[in-house]
Length: 63
Image 1: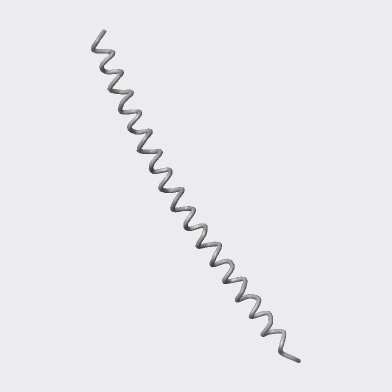
Image 2 (image 1 turned 120 degrees about the horizontal axis):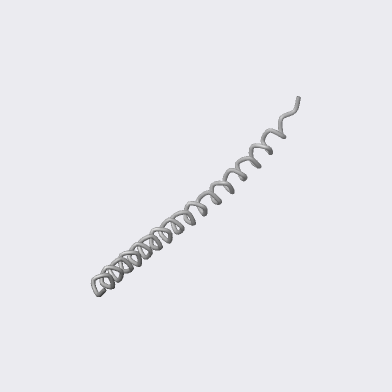
């Protein structure tokens, strides 16, 4: 019986370790995605500004 208890305890310990490692990986990926999302937002704003400038420049042409 004590062998089974020891085995179960060790298994639970390994499961807890796996859960902790996976939680850290999820956090790291979430941090990375957050940074990439911020970059995408900045790039979208830059593209919007360029589109506005292009629209203004094209509007100056007369046919």
